[in-house]
Image (cartoon, rainbow, N blue to C red; front, top):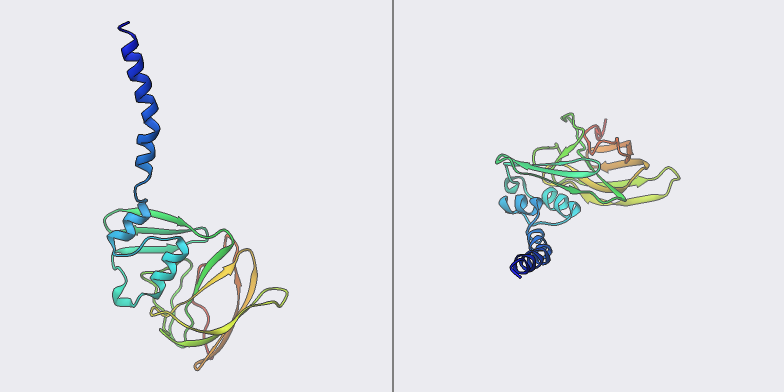
Amino acid sequence: MTSALPRRTLLVGLAATPLVLAGCSAGPSAAEELLAAHGLPAGSAREVIDALEALPLDERPAELLASVGTDVLTLSDAAGREATLELPAEELYVSVAPFVSGTHECFLHSLTTCLGELAEEELAVRVEDASGTLLIDEERTTAPNGFLGLWLPRDEELTFTLTGDPGEATTTLRTDAEAPTCVTTMQLGA
């Protein structure tokens, strides 16, 4: 009879374990905590990228690094916190910094440190796929950091043209797993 009590206690304890574990997993994710520490709202990788890209330069968190890869957005800060958010399976984010006279080398776009020459510049944007189908044909304005962010279909080779007061430039954009997410080679009016 004395062995029944410990056995019952053990069974009750095991039955409660999933509830305790479920309660632990309901807390904020590492990405949510990291973003909150820098005064930014949580969201999907797409929402975080779009929000950071739109921020005025003086409002961008100086101690947050946000790097856009082909599959994930990697977040880290000076306090040693790190997190990743998966990019959409069907889209790749490519950020383009058109320029007239000055540029920098870049392969993976940093949402908090990369700066382009033409901030808040209105440009005509045209993107066509290999069959000539027009994916984008509209006026857009570069972000405060001088970059123009594009969500593009994955695994494509696209013709990308920018036209504005400084001139025009055309390049080929790849959106495969080896593609750059930062393009700084489009010189307008060259």
